[in-house]
Image (cartoon, rainbow, N blue to C red; front, top):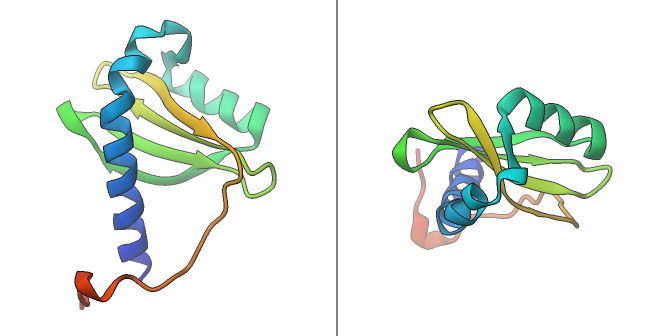
Length: 107
């Protein structure tokens, strides 16, 4: 069941990242080497990685969030090692709810 939630989350993240990746690439202040971006998310917002998946053009899409601060950030890391923040927000919470019956049982 956890894998289904993760798959749905990653699907949502991939769609969101695909629509905003071009905007993030144009705004160089939102892009930096991956280690620098991850350290900033952890130190400033208390965020840690919550999900990961492959995106277009061999990019890696990640969602970082903090239960304590409620902030969340979606990043895309390109094959050249540059990570861009493509979306961010607040009021993050982990939810556990059943999948729609139309998705079927993965077992």
